[in-house]
Image (cartoon, rainbow, N blue to C red; front, side, top):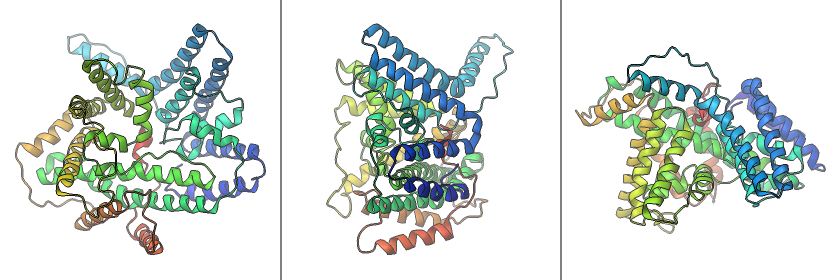
Length: 476
């Protein structure tokens, strides 16, 4: 079920009314959340509900055993079992064909042919997200950072919580799981905050992301026909598309969770206002980058040890991050480029240079900071070319056509939406985000209702309405 669908427009108020009708019983409320979450997930494909249930039951009982057993050897075997089950399921559904085809291609390069057919495997939606969420649960129990949940309903609701089930944020059990054990009291202010986030997220998705997608898709799918200027514009459109799409989903997810009395972690903090790649990764997909920091980078040694080990650890994290996104060499190269951009900052110890929001007390950034923001955005946009392209060869050809024979003539794009108006809209959107960069959404201050009205009008007049406009990160 999509947040921007008619089905969800019916699903949300029905679930909301049922949930708060039983505000005197947290157990019934959690059962309602659990059933609603399985309906939400099963709306896409009910066949994979069993997979979600299996992952939930496996980690619930492994968690109990981890807490009960005191022998280190036994506990380590239980952790390995959790890793094997979770990563094994994820690996089969997401990476089986990738490894098989890569293996065949490698042997064919040596002149050895294999007649092995790949499988027609459907990737379960959200599997990368809920797998990492349950993995962090068992790892944290093993490290004795949290206690195992004794309540299966609470734990199952935590794993399948529908606002963030299919595209995050990837929550930690220490933050989200205890919230299912607390009695909920309806908080009107929290609900209003939630509605504001939902409205802003829908604007990002339906007006910004889906409109940019029309142009980005047209350019990337026919890049051989366009000149340098159009190809650069296509990459910029995709940069705005993926940011507005993913952060828009997160805003909606956090907003919907607030309607039910839950607080989810922030996943985006205006990443395109970053002044270097290090700052970008503290602001982009925060739940994933902190997950890799805590469960991969630090266990590898983190920033301890020699310079070489630190560089190695960073490279591993970025390569795994790229591979997490999809079974294609384009994602691995995307991660590798980000590693190459980050490592010089690590060597010069400037990767944590910018820890505060740029120009906190300034209306506009300084010329120096503006040039850094523009430079970082340009580098990130360049890497998105690999992320968006169907293959490495397509990405390289796209880049080649930009630099080899640069032409910047205005070209006609065979799409029905506006063109110059979109650039103006993106400029306005960027300005709105800049002036509200210290807040989660722009609906604040004395012009709050004017802003809300403008966004609603934009949704009604400029929004892309379709039950097929999925969020980009659903495929991961």
